[in-house]
Amino acid sequence: MRTASRRIACVSALALWAGALGAQTSTEVILKSKDGSISVSGELIGIESGLYVIESHIGLVRIPVASVDCIGPCDLGSTTTAAVEPAQEPAPEPASAAVEPAAVAVAQPEPVVEAPKAVLTEAAAPVEQASAPQADVPASAKFGIHGSRTLGTFLLPNLIKAYAAKIGATYEMFDDNPKERIVRVTAADGTVIAEIDLQTKGSGSAFPGLGEGIADIGMADRRMKDDDLAKLGTLGELRDTPNEIVLGRDGIVSIVHPSNPLSDISFEDLSRIYSGEATNWSEFGGPDAPIAVHSFPDGSGDRAVFLSRAVDPFGKIETETAIEHQEYAEMRGAVAADPAAIGFLGRPFTTDEIKVLPIREQCGLVSQPSNFRMKTEGYAMSRRLYLYRKPGVIHPFAEELLAFALSPEGQQVLVDSNFVDNEIEGMRLADMSSELDFARTEPDFRPAAFDALLNDLGDAERLSIAFRFEFARATLDQLSERAVSDFAAKLQSGAFDGKEILVVGFADSVGRFEQNQRLAMARAEVVADLLSTRIGRINADKYGLKPVSFGELLPYLCNEDEFGRDSNRRVEIWVR
Image (cartoon, rainbow, N blue to C red; front, side):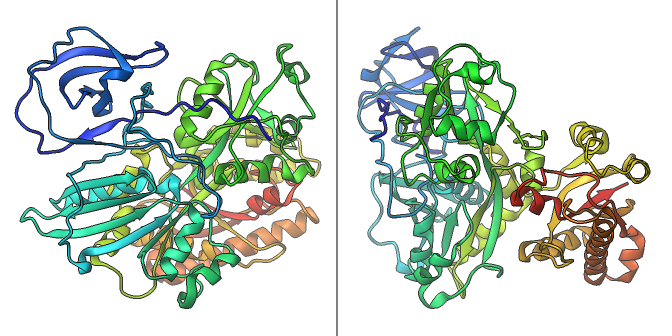
Protein backbone atom coordinates (compact mmCIF):
# COMPACT_ATOMS: atom_id res chain seq x y z
CA MET A 1 0.00 0.00 0.00
CA ARG A 2 1.24 3.48 -0.83
CA THR A 3 1.32 5.94 2.04
CA ALA A 4 -1.86 7.97 2.42
CA SER A 5 -1.36 11.56 3.50
CA ARG A 6 -3.20 13.14 6.42
CA ARG A 7 -6.28 14.57 4.80
CA ILE A 8 -7.04 18.21 5.41
CA ALA A 9 -10.68 18.95 4.66
CA CYS A 10 -11.21 22.50 3.58
CA VAL A 11 -13.95 25.02 4.00
CA SER A 12 -14.13 26.45 0.48
CA ALA A 13 -14.81 30.02 -0.53
CA LEU A 14 -18.49 30.87 -0.85
CA ALA A 15 -20.53 33.32 -2.90
CA LEU A 16 -23.48 35.24 -1.37
CA TRP A 17 -26.89 35.48 -3.01
CA ALA A 18 -27.29 38.50 -5.26
CA GLY A 19 -30.40 39.32 -3.22
CA ALA A 20 -28.72 39.37 0.21
CA LEU A 21 -30.83 41.11 2.81
CA GLY A 22 -30.25 44.68 3.88
CA ALA A 23 -27.17 46.84 4.36
CA GLN A 24 -24.81 45.53 7.06
CA THR A 25 -22.08 46.94 9.24
CA SER A 26 -18.61 46.10 7.81
CA THR A 27 -15.35 45.67 9.73
CA GLU A 28 -11.85 44.52 8.64
CA VAL A 29 -10.91 41.22 10.32
CA ILE A 30 -8.54 38.28 9.89
CA LEU A 31 -9.80 34.72 10.36
CA LYS A 32 -7.06 32.19 11.17
CA SER A 33 -7.28 28.42 11.36
CA LYS A 34 -6.79 27.04 14.87
CA ASP A 35 -3.24 25.88 14.06
CA GLY A 36 -2.41 29.32 12.62
CA SER A 37 -1.19 27.88 9.31
CA ILE A 38 -3.69 29.52 6.99
CA SER A 39 -5.93 32.57 7.05
CA VAL A 40 -8.36 34.72 5.12
CA SER A 41 -8.97 38.44 5.63
CA GLY A 42 -11.62 40.94 4.61
CA GLU A 43 -14.61 42.99 5.70
CA LEU A 44 -16.77 41.24 8.31
CA ILE A 45 -20.36 41.34 7.08
CA GLY A 46 -22.16 39.21 9.62
CA ILE A 47 -22.85 35.80 11.16
CA GLU A 48 -25.53 33.22 10.55
CA SER A 49 -25.96 29.80 12.15
CA GLY A 50 -22.44 29.85 13.57
CA LEU A 51 -20.81 30.96 10.29
CA TYR A 52 -18.71 34.10 9.72
CA VAL A 53 -19.49 35.90 6.43
CA ILE A 54 -16.75 38.22 5.14
CA GLU A 55 -16.00 40.11 1.93
CA SER A 56 -12.56 38.83 0.86
CA HIS A 57 -10.42 39.35 -2.27
CA ILE A 58 -12.30 36.46 -3.92
CA GLY A 59 -15.77 37.68 -2.94
CA LEU A 60 -18.13 36.87 -0.09
CA VAL A 61 -17.09 33.80 1.90
CA ARG A 62 -18.62 31.89 4.82
CA ILE A 63 -16.48 30.09 7.43
CA PRO A 64 -17.57 28.16 10.56
CA VAL A 65 -16.89 30.17 13.74
CA ALA A 66 -15.67 27.06 15.56
CA SER A 67 -12.91 26.40 13.02
CA VAL A 68 -11.10 29.77 13.22
CA ASP A 69 -9.90 32.56 15.50
CA CYS A 70 -11.13 36.06 14.66
CA ILE A 71 -8.55 38.85 14.88
CA GLY A 72 -9.85 42.43 14.88
CA PRO A 73 -13.21 43.97 15.80
CA CYS A 74 -15.31 40.81 15.97
CA ASP A 75 -18.56 42.10 17.49
CA LEU A 76 -21.07 40.01 15.63
CA GLY A 77 -24.13 40.50 17.77
CA SER A 78 -26.14 42.78 15.49
CA THR A 79 -25.37 41.42 12.03
CA THR A 80 -27.19 38.92 9.84
CA THR A 81 -26.99 37.69 6.27
CA ALA A 82 -28.90 35.76 3.66
CA ALA A 83 -28.24 32.05 3.13
CA VAL A 84 -25.11 31.01 1.25
CA GLU A 85 -23.69 27.79 -0.17
CA PRO A 86 -20.20 26.25 -0.22
CA ALA A 87 -18.28 25.75 -3.44
CA GLN A 88 -16.00 22.76 -3.33
CA GLU A 89 -12.47 22.40 -4.68
CA PRO A 90 -12.10 19.57 -7.18
CA ALA A 91 -10.28 16.37 -6.41
CA PRO A 92 -7.85 15.14 -9.11
CA GLU A 93 -9.82 14.13 -12.19
CA PRO A 94 -10.63 10.38 -12.21
CA ALA A 95 -9.60 8.44 -15.32
CA SER A 96 -13.04 6.81 -15.44
CA ALA A 97 -16.32 6.77 -13.60
CA ALA A 98 -15.46 3.45 -11.99
CA VAL A 99 -12.68 4.74 -9.74
CA GLU A 100 -13.40 7.86 -7.70
CA PRO A 101 -11.43 9.54 -4.90
CA ALA A 102 -13.51 9.93 -1.78
CA ALA A 103 -15.27 13.30 -1.56
CA VAL A 104 -14.22 15.76 1.15
CA ALA A 105 -17.08 16.81 3.38
CA VAL A 106 -17.39 20.57 3.71
CA ALA A 107 -20.28 20.78 6.15
CA GLN A 108 -18.19 20.09 9.24
CA PRO A 109 -16.10 22.82 10.94
CA GLU A 110 -12.56 22.38 9.61
CA PRO A 111 -9.49 24.63 9.16
CA VAL A 112 -9.97 27.13 6.37
CA VAL A 113 -7.72 27.02 3.34
CA GLU A 114 -6.63 30.27 1.77
CA ALA A 115 -8.01 30.58 -1.75
CA PRO A 116 -5.73 30.93 -4.79
CA LYS A 117 -5.22 34.51 -5.92
CA ALA A 118 -6.85 34.08 -9.32
CA VAL A 119 -10.55 34.86 -9.39
CA LEU A 120 -13.20 32.26 -10.12
CA THR A 121 -10.84 29.36 -9.44
CA GLU A 122 -11.05 26.13 -7.48
CA ALA A 123 -11.94 27.73 -4.14
CA ALA A 124 -14.03 30.52 -5.59
CA ALA A 125 -16.63 28.81 -7.74
CA PRO A 126 -19.62 31.11 -8.06
CA VAL A 127 -22.46 29.29 -6.28
CA GLU A 128 -25.71 30.54 -4.85
CA GLN A 129 -28.30 28.42 -3.10
CA ALA A 130 -31.96 28.44 -2.26
CA SER A 131 -33.44 26.21 0.43
CA ALA A 132 -34.16 23.23 -1.82
CA PRO A 133 -34.90 22.42 -5.48
CA GLN A 134 -38.51 23.06 -6.38
CA ALA A 135 -40.56 19.96 -7.11
CA ASP A 136 -42.78 21.74 -9.67
CA VAL A 137 -40.08 22.57 -12.25
CA PRO A 138 -41.41 21.21 -15.57
CA ALA A 139 -39.52 18.33 -17.16
CA SER A 140 -39.05 20.44 -20.29
CA ALA A 141 -36.75 22.76 -18.30
CA LYS A 142 -34.43 19.96 -17.19
CA PHE A 143 -31.30 18.52 -18.77
CA GLY A 144 -27.96 17.07 -17.66
CA ILE A 145 -24.27 17.97 -17.93
CA HIS A 146 -22.14 14.98 -16.88
CA GLY A 147 -18.46 14.07 -16.77
CA SER A 148 -15.12 15.57 -15.79
CA ARG A 149 -14.63 16.83 -12.26
CA THR A 150 -11.85 19.15 -13.42
CA LEU A 151 -14.28 20.91 -15.75
CA GLY A 152 -17.47 20.44 -13.80
CA THR A 153 -16.51 21.48 -10.29
CA PHE A 154 -16.01 25.17 -11.01
CA LEU A 155 -15.37 25.89 -14.71
CA LEU A 156 -18.82 24.87 -15.99
CA PRO A 157 -20.59 26.56 -13.05
CA ASN A 158 -18.61 29.71 -13.86
CA LEU A 159 -19.73 29.51 -17.49
CA ILE A 160 -23.36 28.89 -16.55
CA LYS A 161 -23.38 31.79 -14.11
CA ALA A 162 -21.73 34.14 -16.61
CA TYR A 163 -24.26 33.25 -19.30
CA ALA A 164 -27.16 33.58 -16.87
CA ALA A 165 -25.94 37.09 -15.99
CA LYS A 166 -25.63 37.93 -19.69
CA ILE A 167 -29.30 37.13 -20.31
CA GLY A 168 -30.50 38.81 -17.10
CA ALA A 169 -31.32 35.57 -15.28
CA THR A 170 -30.50 34.44 -11.74
CA TYR A 171 -28.36 31.44 -10.84
CA GLU A 172 -28.77 29.00 -7.96
CA MET A 173 -26.88 25.82 -7.03
CA PHE A 174 -27.84 22.96 -4.71
CA ASP A 175 -25.04 20.57 -3.73
CA ASP A 176 -26.06 18.17 -0.97
CA ASN A 177 -23.91 15.71 -2.93
CA PRO A 178 -20.85 17.49 -4.42
CA LYS A 179 -20.76 15.01 -7.31
CA GLU A 180 -24.45 15.44 -8.14
CA ARG A 181 -25.50 19.07 -7.98
CA ILE A 182 -28.52 20.90 -9.32
CA VAL A 183 -28.09 24.27 -11.03
CA ARG A 184 -31.17 26.39 -11.67
CA VAL A 185 -31.37 29.39 -14.00
CA THR A 186 -34.46 31.56 -13.54
CA ALA A 187 -35.73 34.43 -15.68
CA ALA A 188 -36.61 37.83 -14.20
CA ASP A 189 -40.33 36.93 -14.27
CA GLY A 190 -39.72 33.82 -12.15
CA THR A 191 -39.87 31.30 -14.99
CA VAL A 192 -37.31 28.51 -14.66
CA ILE A 193 -35.28 28.61 -17.88
CA ALA A 194 -33.21 25.53 -17.04
CA GLU A 195 -32.67 23.11 -14.18
CA ILE A 196 -29.38 21.33 -14.82
CA ASP A 197 -28.34 17.98 -13.38
CA LEU A 198 -24.58 18.68 -13.02
CA GLN A 199 -22.75 15.42 -12.29
CA THR A 200 -18.95 15.37 -11.89
CA LYS A 201 -17.99 11.70 -11.58
CA GLY A 202 -15.14 11.67 -14.07
CA SER A 203 -14.62 11.99 -17.82
CA GLY A 204 -15.68 8.38 -18.37
CA SER A 205 -19.15 9.15 -16.99
CA ALA A 206 -19.82 11.69 -19.74
CA PHE A 207 -20.53 9.05 -22.38
CA PRO A 208 -23.08 6.85 -20.58
CA GLY A 209 -24.88 10.05 -19.57
CA LEU A 210 -25.15 11.03 -23.22
CA GLY A 211 -25.98 7.50 -24.34
CA GLU A 212 -28.77 7.08 -21.80
CA GLY A 213 -30.28 10.41 -22.83
CA ILE A 214 -29.99 12.01 -19.37
CA ALA A 215 -27.20 14.41 -20.38
CA ASP A 216 -27.20 16.87 -23.26
CA ILE A 217 -23.55 17.81 -22.70
CA GLY A 218 -20.64 15.57 -21.70
CA MET A 219 -17.42 16.97 -20.16
CA ALA A 220 -14.02 15.30 -20.63
CA ASP A 221 -10.43 16.34 -19.98
CA ARG A 222 -9.28 13.76 -22.51
CA ARG A 223 -10.55 12.80 -25.93
CA MET A 224 -13.22 10.16 -26.37
CA LYS A 225 -11.68 6.68 -26.63
CA ASP A 226 -12.72 3.60 -28.58
CA ASP A 227 -14.10 1.91 -25.49
CA ASP A 228 -16.37 4.93 -24.86
CA LEU A 229 -18.25 4.15 -28.07
CA ALA A 230 -20.23 1.30 -26.52
CA LYS A 231 -21.37 3.63 -23.70
CA LEU A 232 -22.99 5.94 -26.25
CA GLY A 233 -25.54 3.34 -27.35
CA THR A 234 -27.23 4.35 -30.59
CA LEU A 235 -25.66 7.83 -30.70
CA GLY A 236 -22.60 6.51 -32.51
CA GLU A 237 -19.23 8.16 -33.08
CA LEU A 238 -18.77 11.72 -31.79
CA ARG A 239 -15.10 12.19 -32.65
CA ASP A 240 -14.37 14.37 -35.67
CA THR A 241 -17.98 15.57 -35.81
CA PRO A 242 -19.51 18.95 -34.92
CA ASN A 243 -20.58 17.34 -31.63
CA GLU A 244 -16.95 17.19 -30.43
CA ILE A 245 -16.00 20.64 -29.11
CA VAL A 246 -12.57 21.70 -27.87
CA LEU A 247 -13.45 24.11 -25.05
CA GLY A 248 -9.84 25.00 -24.15
CA ARG A 249 -6.68 23.46 -22.76
CA ASP A 250 -4.67 22.90 -19.65
CA GLY A 251 -1.60 20.88 -18.69
CA ILE A 252 0.03 18.87 -15.93
CA VAL A 253 3.14 20.42 -14.36
CA SER A 254 5.87 19.09 -12.09
CA ILE A 255 6.11 21.03 -8.80
CA VAL A 256 8.70 21.38 -6.03
CA HIS A 257 9.33 23.58 -3.00
CA PRO A 258 10.38 27.17 -3.93
CA SER A 259 13.80 26.62 -2.32
CA ASN A 260 14.62 23.71 -4.65
CA PRO A 261 17.62 24.76 -6.80
CA LEU A 262 16.49 22.89 -9.94
CA SER A 263 15.43 25.15 -12.81
CA ASP A 264 13.97 22.35 -14.97
CA ILE A 265 13.72 18.58 -15.02
CA SER A 266 13.69 15.85 -17.67
CA PHE A 267 11.18 13.05 -18.09
CA GLU A 268 14.01 10.57 -17.57
CA ASP A 269 14.85 12.20 -14.23
CA LEU A 270 11.16 12.15 -13.25
CA SER A 271 10.97 8.46 -14.16
CA ARG A 272 13.92 7.69 -11.89
CA ILE A 273 12.39 9.70 -9.04
CA TYR A 274 8.86 8.35 -9.38
CA SER A 275 10.00 4.74 -9.76
CA GLY A 276 12.08 5.00 -6.59
CA GLU A 277 15.33 4.44 -8.49
CA ALA A 278 16.63 7.89 -7.46
CA THR A 279 16.03 8.77 -3.82
CA ASN A 280 18.23 11.80 -3.02
CA TRP A 281 18.25 15.31 -4.47
CA SER A 282 22.06 15.27 -4.57
CA GLU A 283 21.77 12.97 -7.62
CA PHE A 284 20.37 15.94 -9.54
CA GLY A 285 22.64 18.70 -8.25
CA GLY A 286 20.46 19.51 -5.26
CA PRO A 287 21.05 19.22 -1.52
CA ASP A 288 21.83 15.96 0.27
CA ALA A 289 18.21 15.25 1.21
CA PRO A 290 15.89 12.27 0.63
CA ILE A 291 13.26 12.94 -2.03
CA ALA A 292 9.64 12.91 -0.81
CA VAL A 293 7.51 11.71 -3.75
CA HIS A 294 3.90 12.93 -3.84
CA SER A 295 1.20 11.57 -6.14
CA PHE A 296 -2.52 10.94 -6.51
CA PRO A 297 -4.36 7.61 -6.15
CA ASP A 298 -5.00 5.05 -8.87
CA GLY A 299 -7.86 6.31 -11.03
CA SER A 300 -6.75 9.94 -11.06
CA GLY A 301 -6.77 11.35 -14.59
CA ASP A 302 -4.00 13.79 -13.69
CA ARG A 303 -1.85 10.90 -12.48
CA ALA A 304 -2.60 8.98 -15.69
CA VAL A 305 -1.40 11.89 -17.86
CA PHE A 306 1.72 12.40 -15.75
CA LEU A 307 2.73 8.74 -15.68
CA SER A 308 2.01 8.25 -19.39
CA ARG A 309 4.63 10.87 -20.28
CA ALA A 310 7.07 10.79 -17.37
CA VAL A 311 7.23 7.18 -16.19
CA ASP A 312 5.61 4.61 -18.50
CA PRO A 313 7.76 5.33 -21.60
CA PHE A 314 10.86 4.33 -19.62
CA GLY A 315 9.47 0.93 -18.69
CA LYS A 316 9.07 1.88 -15.03
CA ILE A 317 6.19 1.91 -12.54
CA GLU A 318 5.43 4.35 -9.76
CA THR A 319 7.05 3.62 -6.40
CA GLU A 320 4.87 2.14 -3.67
CA THR A 321 6.24 4.72 -1.23
CA ALA A 322 4.65 7.69 -3.03
CA ILE A 323 2.50 9.78 -0.68
CA GLU A 324 -1.06 9.90 -1.96
CA HIS A 325 -3.32 12.95 -1.89
CA GLN A 326 -7.03 13.11 -2.61
CA GLU A 327 -7.21 16.86 -3.26
CA TYR A 328 -5.21 19.40 -5.23
CA ALA A 329 -4.93 21.59 -2.13
CA GLU A 330 -3.42 18.71 -0.18
CA MET A 331 -0.76 18.12 -2.83
CA ARG A 332 -0.02 21.82 -3.14
CA GLY A 333 0.19 22.32 0.62
CA ALA A 334 2.39 19.27 1.20
CA VAL A 335 4.94 20.32 -1.44
CA ALA A 336 4.90 23.93 -0.20
CA ALA A 337 5.69 22.73 3.32
CA ASP A 338 8.58 20.36 2.48
CA PRO A 339 11.83 21.50 0.78
CA ALA A 340 12.50 17.87 -0.22
CA ALA A 341 9.11 17.26 -1.85
CA ILE A 342 8.17 16.76 -5.50
CA GLY A 343 4.67 16.41 -6.94
CA PHE A 344 2.49 17.34 -9.91
CA LEU A 345 -0.69 19.34 -10.48
CA GLY A 346 -2.93 20.64 -13.19
CA ARG A 347 -1.50 24.06 -14.01
CA PRO A 348 -4.79 25.89 -13.17
CA PHE A 349 -4.31 24.83 -9.54
CA THR A 350 -0.76 26.09 -9.02
CA THR A 351 0.02 29.14 -6.83
CA ASP A 352 3.06 31.15 -5.80
CA GLU A 353 3.64 28.90 -2.78
CA ILE A 354 5.16 26.21 -5.03
CA LYS A 355 7.72 26.17 -7.86
CA VAL A 356 6.83 24.82 -11.32
CA LEU A 357 9.62 23.00 -13.18
CA PRO A 358 9.65 23.21 -16.99
CA ILE A 359 10.35 19.96 -18.82
CA ARG A 360 13.83 19.48 -20.32
CA GLU A 361 13.43 17.26 -23.37
CA GLN A 362 15.84 14.46 -24.35
CA CYS A 363 17.60 16.63 -26.88
CA GLY A 364 18.02 19.55 -24.48
CA LEU A 365 15.07 21.71 -25.52
CA VAL A 366 13.16 23.12 -22.54
CA SER A 367 9.37 22.90 -22.78
CA GLN A 368 7.73 25.70 -20.80
CA PRO A 369 4.11 25.20 -19.60
CA SER A 370 3.10 28.52 -21.16
CA ASN A 371 -0.28 29.40 -22.62
CA PHE A 372 1.29 29.68 -26.07
CA ARG A 373 2.88 26.23 -25.93
CA MET A 374 -0.33 24.67 -24.62
CA LYS A 375 -2.34 26.29 -27.41
CA THR A 376 0.06 24.95 -30.02
CA GLU A 377 0.39 21.64 -28.11
CA GLY A 378 4.11 22.18 -27.85
CA TYR A 379 4.15 21.46 -24.11
CA ALA A 380 4.71 17.79 -23.43
CA MET A 381 1.93 17.38 -20.84
CA SER A 382 -0.71 19.66 -22.34
CA ARG A 383 -4.22 18.33 -22.91
CA ARG A 384 -7.40 19.46 -24.58
CA LEU A 385 -10.62 20.00 -22.66
CA TYR A 386 -13.66 18.62 -24.46
CA LEU A 387 -17.38 19.17 -24.42
CA TYR A 388 -19.44 16.51 -26.23
CA ARG A 389 -22.89 17.47 -27.49
CA LYS A 390 -25.63 14.88 -27.69
CA PRO A 391 -26.53 14.51 -31.40
CA GLY A 392 -29.94 15.81 -32.42
CA VAL A 393 -32.13 18.36 -30.67
CA ILE A 394 -30.99 19.35 -27.19
CA HIS A 395 -32.33 21.77 -24.57
CA PRO A 396 -32.23 25.36 -25.92
CA PHE A 397 -30.25 26.60 -22.90
CA ALA A 398 -27.68 23.82 -23.45
CA GLU A 399 -27.30 24.87 -27.07
CA GLU A 400 -26.91 28.52 -26.08
CA LEU A 401 -24.41 27.63 -23.35
CA LEU A 402 -22.18 25.79 -25.84
CA ALA A 403 -22.21 28.80 -28.16
CA PHE A 404 -21.45 31.14 -25.24
CA ALA A 405 -18.57 28.94 -24.04
CA LEU A 406 -16.81 29.38 -27.39
CA SER A 407 -17.54 33.11 -27.65
CA PRO A 408 -14.98 35.74 -26.55
CA GLU A 409 -16.99 36.29 -23.34
CA GLY A 410 -17.09 32.59 -22.58
CA GLN A 411 -13.41 32.13 -23.37
CA GLN A 412 -12.60 34.93 -20.93
CA VAL A 413 -14.29 32.84 -18.22
CA LEU A 414 -11.68 30.13 -18.95
CA VAL A 415 -8.89 32.69 -18.55
CA ASP A 416 -10.37 33.98 -15.28
CA SER A 417 -10.60 30.37 -14.10
CA ASN A 418 -6.87 29.78 -14.82
CA PHE A 419 -7.43 27.55 -17.86
CA VAL A 420 -6.10 28.16 -21.38
CA ASP A 421 -8.58 29.63 -23.85
CA ASN A 422 -8.80 29.14 -27.62
CA GLU A 423 -8.12 32.77 -28.52
CA ILE A 424 -5.18 33.35 -30.85
CA GLU A 425 -1.94 34.72 -29.41
CA GLY A 426 1.20 35.92 -31.17
CA MET A 427 4.93 35.36 -30.64
CA ARG A 428 7.91 37.02 -32.34
CA LEU A 429 10.89 35.08 -33.60
CA ALA A 430 13.03 37.03 -31.13
CA ASP A 431 11.05 35.37 -28.31
CA MET A 432 12.06 31.91 -29.53
CA SER A 433 15.74 32.15 -28.64
CA SER A 434 15.97 28.68 -27.09
CA GLU A 435 14.49 27.04 -30.20
CA LEU A 436 16.79 29.06 -32.47
CA ASP A 437 19.87 28.24 -30.40
CA PHE A 438 18.98 24.56 -30.39
CA ALA A 439 18.36 24.51 -34.16
CA ARG A 440 21.96 25.62 -34.73
CA THR A 441 23.22 22.52 -32.88
CA GLU A 442 21.32 19.97 -34.99
CA PRO A 443 23.56 17.49 -36.90
CA ASP A 444 22.07 18.38 -40.31
CA PHE A 445 22.09 22.15 -39.74
CA ARG A 446 22.06 24.17 -43.00
CA PRO A 447 23.33 27.74 -42.45
CA ALA A 448 22.02 29.12 -45.77
CA ALA A 449 18.53 27.73 -45.23
CA PHE A 450 18.57 28.97 -41.62
CA ASP A 451 19.52 32.48 -42.77
CA ALA A 452 16.55 32.38 -45.14
CA LEU A 453 14.30 31.48 -42.20
CA LEU A 454 15.60 34.41 -40.15
CA ASN A 455 15.14 36.74 -43.12
CA ASP A 456 11.58 35.61 -43.96
CA LEU A 457 10.26 35.39 -40.41
CA GLY A 458 12.36 38.01 -38.63
CA ASP A 459 9.74 40.74 -38.97
CA ALA A 460 6.74 38.42 -38.66
CA GLU A 461 4.71 37.12 -35.73
CA ARG A 462 3.83 33.49 -35.19
CA LEU A 463 0.22 32.78 -34.26
CA SER A 464 -0.77 30.14 -31.70
CA ILE A 465 -2.15 27.89 -34.42
CA ALA A 466 -0.55 24.64 -35.56
CA PHE A 467 -1.89 22.20 -38.15
CA ARG A 468 -0.62 18.63 -37.66
CA PHE A 469 0.06 16.03 -40.33
CA GLU A 470 0.28 12.26 -40.55
CA PHE A 471 3.73 10.67 -40.74
CA ALA A 472 5.48 10.98 -44.14
CA ARG A 473 2.32 12.42 -45.72
CA ALA A 474 0.82 15.78 -46.61
CA THR A 475 -2.52 14.74 -45.06
CA LEU A 476 -3.99 16.79 -42.22
CA ASP A 477 -5.25 15.00 -39.15
CA GLN A 478 -8.97 15.42 -38.44
CA LEU A 479 -8.70 18.05 -35.72
CA SER A 480 -6.40 20.14 -37.91
CA GLU A 481 -8.96 20.10 -40.72
CA ARG A 482 -11.42 21.68 -38.34
CA ALA A 483 -8.77 24.19 -37.25
CA VAL A 484 -8.35 25.26 -40.88
CA SER A 485 -12.07 26.09 -41.05
CA ASP A 486 -11.87 28.02 -37.79
CA PHE A 487 -8.94 30.11 -39.00
CA ALA A 488 -10.66 30.72 -42.34
CA ALA A 489 -13.60 32.17 -40.40
CA LYS A 490 -11.16 34.49 -38.58
CA LEU A 491 -9.80 35.70 -41.91
CA GLN A 492 -13.31 36.29 -43.26
CA SER A 493 -14.17 38.30 -40.15
CA GLY A 494 -11.44 40.80 -41.01
CA ALA A 495 -9.38 40.03 -37.91
CA PHE A 496 -6.15 40.16 -39.94
CA ASP A 497 -6.97 42.83 -42.49
CA GLY A 498 -3.85 44.67 -43.63
CA LYS A 499 -1.59 41.70 -42.82
CA GLU A 500 0.29 39.31 -45.06
CA ILE A 501 -0.27 35.67 -44.13
CA LEU A 502 2.66 33.24 -44.37
CA VAL A 503 1.78 29.53 -44.32
CA VAL A 504 4.96 27.93 -43.01
CA GLY A 505 5.62 24.19 -43.27
CA PHE A 506 7.92 22.12 -41.04
CA ALA A 507 8.86 18.44 -40.75
CA ASP A 508 10.48 16.03 -38.32
CA SER A 509 14.09 15.00 -38.91
CA VAL A 510 13.41 11.47 -40.13
CA GLY A 511 14.85 11.11 -43.65
CA ARG A 512 17.00 13.38 -45.80
CA PHE A 513 16.99 17.15 -45.36
CA GLU A 514 15.89 17.83 -48.96
CA GLN A 515 13.09 15.29 -48.72
CA ASN A 516 11.78 16.92 -45.53
CA GLN A 517 12.01 20.33 -47.19
CA ARG A 518 9.79 19.16 -50.03
CA LEU A 519 7.36 17.42 -47.69
CA ALA A 520 7.03 20.55 -45.54
CA MET A 521 6.32 22.63 -48.66
CA ALA A 522 3.64 20.17 -49.76
CA ARG A 523 2.02 20.48 -46.35
CA ALA A 524 2.13 24.29 -46.46
CA GLU A 525 0.54 24.23 -49.91
CA VAL A 526 -2.26 21.95 -48.66
CA VAL A 527 -3.15 24.41 -45.89
CA ALA A 528 -2.84 27.45 -48.17
CA ASP A 529 -5.13 25.83 -50.77
CA LEU A 530 -7.70 24.86 -48.15
CA LEU A 531 -7.75 28.39 -46.75
CA SER A 532 -8.04 29.85 -50.24
CA THR A 533 -11.00 27.59 -51.01
CA ARG A 534 -12.80 28.55 -47.82
CA ILE A 535 -12.31 32.33 -48.01
CA GLY A 536 -12.45 32.77 -51.79
CA ARG A 537 -9.82 33.85 -54.29
CA ILE A 538 -10.31 37.61 -53.75
CA ASN A 539 -9.68 37.34 -50.02
CA ALA A 540 -6.85 34.87 -50.59
CA ASP A 541 -5.10 37.38 -52.86
CA LYS A 542 -5.63 40.10 -50.23
CA TYR A 543 -3.82 38.08 -47.56
CA GLY A 544 -1.21 36.50 -49.83
CA LEU A 545 -1.38 33.07 -48.18
CA LYS A 546 2.19 32.46 -49.25
CA PRO A 547 3.36 28.84 -48.64
CA VAL A 548 6.91 28.62 -47.26
CA SER A 549 8.99 25.58 -46.24
CA PHE A 550 11.74 25.29 -43.65
CA GLY A 551 11.67 21.52 -43.29
CA GLU A 552 13.36 20.27 -40.14
CA LEU A 553 15.13 23.58 -39.38
CA LEU A 554 13.15 24.70 -36.31
CA PRO A 555 12.10 21.72 -34.15
CA TYR A 556 9.45 22.55 -31.58
CA LEU A 557 10.09 19.42 -29.53
CA CYS A 558 12.75 16.71 -29.71
CA ASN A 559 12.70 14.25 -32.61
CA GLU A 560 13.84 11.41 -30.35
CA ASP A 561 10.31 10.13 -29.64
CA GLU A 562 7.03 9.95 -31.52
CA PHE A 563 5.37 12.63 -29.40
CA GLY A 564 8.04 15.11 -30.40
CA ARG A 565 8.11 14.05 -34.05
CA ASP A 566 4.35 14.41 -34.23
CA SER A 567 4.63 17.98 -32.86
CA ASN A 568 7.29 18.83 -35.45
CA ARG A 569 5.19 17.67 -38.44
CA ARG A 570 3.29 20.93 -38.57
CA VAL A 571 2.22 23.98 -40.52
CA GLU A 572 2.27 27.32 -38.70
CA ILE A 573 0.66 30.67 -39.51
CA TRP A 574 2.88 33.76 -39.39
CA VAL A 575 1.65 37.30 -40.07
CA ARG A 576 3.46 40.51 -41.01
